[in-house]
Length: 196
Image (cartoon, rainbow, N blue to C red; front, side, top):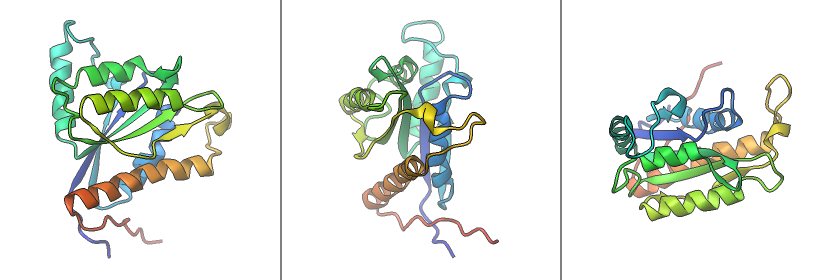
């Protein structure tokens, strides 16, 4: 019988607008792991479902109000981004720039996931993203996941061929929950037992 855990609400922000993108397909494993733990709820911040606007543009005030509310309501945040030209995506930067000042990320535990086509993975984008998150006062957790050669990880039918990467992505969820358990004195998060 799973322990009843203190409620944890995770906001997961996706840094891409591309349909059927690799970033969301990989983030799925982290979210699936989170959903297997009792007392955990998830809010996926999908920019494709938002009216994006740069700060100062029409619509930015409404976007900022929505993002600040959603991030303020989160116990912790996951940021997932593709790597574009050696850095994280402009889409994710728009989301971060609209999280208010001081940022709603301030004081929030943040876990990072980067996805890239190249063989070195998303190392540079994660370095830049960590720097920005630290600058706005987020608590950036160790062990970000950098996924390399993402196109080779999926079959033409879209099926994943990535047991090690999947394990690393699930570990993002496990480490985030472990941090929250230690920080907030929460009882252990246990996976729900699904009967056969």
